[in-house]
Length: 123
Image 1 (cartoon, one colour):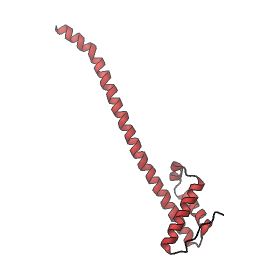
Image 2 (cartoon, one colour; image 1 turned 90 degrees about the horizontal axis):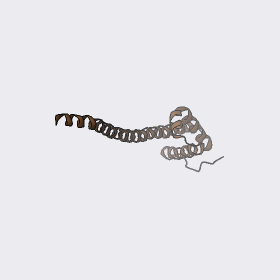
Image 3 (cartoon, one colour; image 1 turned 180 degrees about the horizontal axis):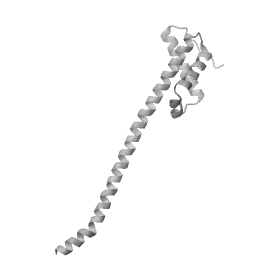
Image 4 (cartoon, helix red, strand yellow; image 1 turned 60 degrees about the vertical axis):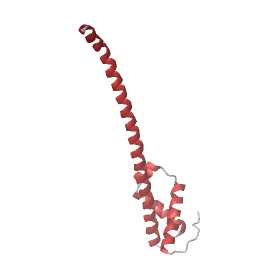
């Protein structure tokens, strides 16, 4: 009887170990996917915040130099392009999106600083 149990154990053990290994692999793969999604979103949020901050800094710098309208927007976009190249590479916004964001930041800064808030032309 002991010999039979020993043979049975020897035959079943590799199957049990294979099943346990497969289960652990699934658990690890699931955890890795969740971690990637979570940290990927956090990284994207940091890049987005950095881009918005750089655009606002660029707008403030443009306004301090007396630029307004399209010139201020272009200056802010140029500033952000030099300031946060990693964020731009990661997020991949088009030049039109950058221009719209900078226009929004210009209006926001003008309102805070008490400038006359008019339309920013698309010259």
